[in-house]
Structures are given as C-alpha cells and as structure tokens.
Image 1 (cartoon, rainbow, N blue to C red):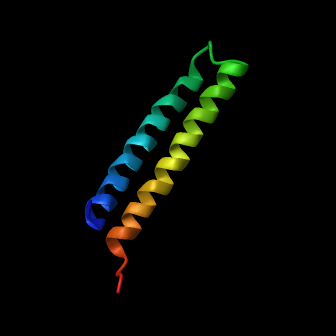
Image 2 (cartoon, rainbow, N blue to C red):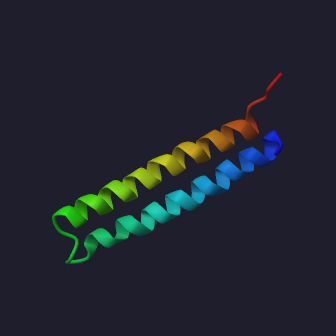
Length: 68
C-alpha cells in the first residue's frame, strides 16, 4: 500500500466514522435514551466522532504535507 492510498483510506474511514457517530448521537432525542443507555450512546457517538476526526485529519495531513 502506498503512502497516497493510505492517506485516502484514512480520510474515507475517518469520514465514515464521523458520519456513524453523528447518526448514533441523533438517538439521544429518543424518549428511551435515559440512564445507562444515554451514557452508552454518548460514549459511542463521541468516541466515533473523535477517532474519525483524528483519522481524517491525519489523512489530510499526509496528502498535503511535503515529505523530503
């Protein structure tokens, strides 16, 4: 796997994780999201968004930064 394909993979996977986390966080408005279930939704959603953002930023950095 080349550096460029790795960067694009990180970018796409990061975007998918952010989108998935956003979808999970949308379930917080449901009436059944109380107590432990709400905590689990927040943990999963925020964790997915954070890891996706970090991976996406790493991919963008790899595509933009010049390596000599």
